[in-house]
Length: 236
Image (cartoon, rainbow, N blue to C red; front, top):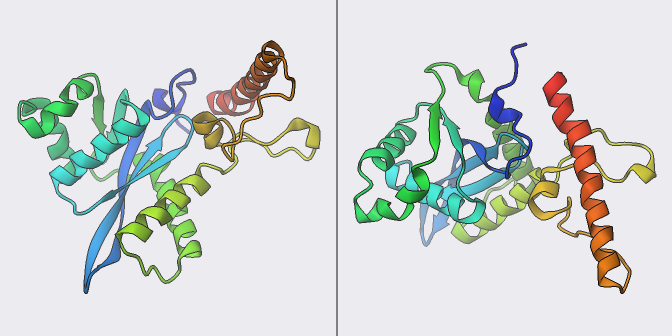
């Protein structure tokens, strides 16, 4: 097996600094009496295996740019973006590099200047396996939650956000049978502090002691993260 890319091993970086992007769908929604197509745009953090989902109303370049802008507004500017050679990705990268004086694109040009956009070689789908496998997981969770898929735009967005939370709650490290070891590391630990979003801050009324208890919790988390996840990827 070849060594993992450097983007998969970047440890002390903000989540979503290195992302892979792909589309999911189409999914059918009811708009009045019409039925229209929507696509999920999956942003996969290559480091901590978290996902972020946006909704595209079509497959053109403007929709792709809007999804990228929404992602940057919520998750920050990535260092590197990895995609296949889809025409919408190619056109988005070209427009943002060469035609950003247009008012529609100037708002994110200053953010985009430092992003490196890397395309997989043509006809090599396995190079996108890091996000393809998560797309399969998203489909499985969505089908289990809503087997009939009777969505409108509002319920589709809500369903995809629920799926995002469930996928980001999955365990990344070994699940110990010893209750004293605490819960396994999940992507949500890196995004919101714990698998469920609840972060203990200590029971003491003394603010200094609370701060120290919180720091001990964070230090313990990073020890587990480095030992059980990062080192496991690095040496295996």
